[in-house]
Amino acid sequence: MSALNSPSEAELKSGLQNKTAIITGGSQGIGFTIAQLCVSNGATVIIADINTERGEQAAAELGNNTLFVRCDVSKWSDQLHLFSTALSHSPHKRLDIVVCNAGVNPEMVFFNAPDGKELVEAQTQVKFNYLADEMDGNYLACPPSTILDINLFGVIYGVKLTVHHMKESGGGRIIVTGSAASYMGMSPQDMYCASKHAVLGLVRATSQKAELEQNNISIGLVAPWLTEMPMTSCVSPPYAKGSLRISPADVANAVGMLAVRDGEQVNGKAIWVQGQTYTEVEGAVAKCYEGMMKSAD
Image: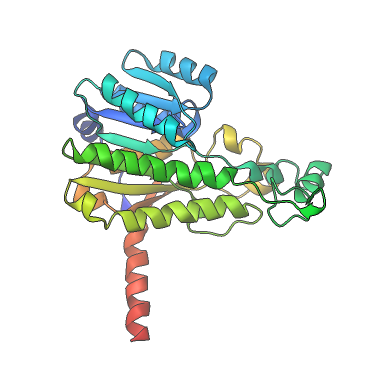
């Protein structure tokens, strides 16, 4: 595994100035901090979020180079509108960077009251525990697809639209917000882990596609550990104890690396974020797989 250095101010300025970026889930937390990084270095930013009130506030805070577009990333029609609006708003009528960051994790409820009544109730509901024996009338209840709709299909839709438009404009960067859960099993976050494992697989496979190689497009992933943001605010001390907490700015720096460094060097890469320590993981994983396949031969 390779340790990486944070991008310098000069790298960020030269790599982001006059660029146009879409950031989904951009109204708060990691997404908002990524937007701040881009705007402060001269980029035009389109933040997409399902929360209209917070999105408009975020755009106002970020200033004139920012546009808010309401978007439910799980809806293809919303993403079509997002990309069309972003292209119209771009000074150069092109997209340079797309950060697929929007995500949800209802299973975080299990960290809110690990020994309380809420936990017991959550364990019996398929919304929070897909193995629960909750009944829908006379039948076993079907687990909702919300987590996969947003965390996986939201990324699939975003990547597809990005590649389509970047092919026409000479390339660009796609960055997906994964998680430590892209690599680890974390019960009771079963569906969340499934979604984050899935986007890692999507990035790995998509990075090898001819559509990217032939059109100067790179795709990479950031994999942060527990990050201080609204979605994780419910994590109680017993679970947080011993964990090196990560700020959204730490994750934004990793996104900055994938956005401004040479496309061939970052394509298909994943940056594990642990505080202000950044480690490229996929090179080591590839060597491990190569060794296993040789052993099998």
